[in-house]
Length: 336
Picture: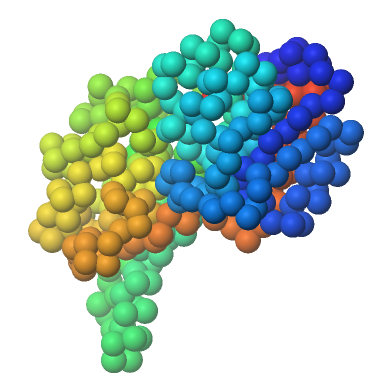
């Protein structure tokens, strides 16, 4: 729900430390009406604060009612006035802590993220990779680069249809739900493993305790798990060994959720036919890391959620939630 405390001030003060381009700033200023928005000093150096999320450094003002971007969690907890934090990312690992939750619940503060902005591009990114690998496009492109080879019979015989194949989704948030919608016309068998079964999922759902029962049947394992103590090394050596021979692994969650050494071993042995990694551990992946040279390992630099009008959509999403906040309506993408 929204918060009635948002109406306690005649003029709301919004502090933004996200790296917002000039065009999006114009939209934000216009969209907040008579309220005040303060952008962190852009002469201050910028620094990464999480998985490829960059924010402008600077202290959270004591009079801020709303923070937009990536405010320091300690400063957020210290503030007695702050009523709403809106993250410009889908991930919220830095804020997933008991002391912050306690502080927020005690003073009725709200934390939201930008999942709605990133679910569509991330789902399309996954679908693109699934289709690319099924139709053997990397092999055709490599043949083009390495000698103009017309490998008609070999590549044609290895191309596959996705229809009726089983895709196992690890996690079922906004990205996974949207991906399941995109896969529906292909007639794939979608199976979900998630921490809590809600009953409204448009697919067969299993609990985390049952993952080892469903892994052997999956042709595609799509990992969208966030980083947390509970998900560290979630796809460990044992679980990776249970994957079907010839299966494909996709990871757009976090690199820490997968045993990368075992992924390399499974690719080298041919047990996994391919792995698509948009996230790694560490990030950026060092040039000398063996993942770069592992056969049939396809790496993109944490770009699954990226798109050309990303900043404009972030601003629009914030303004939509801002309207809801000021009118006491439920906020979108609420985390706390």
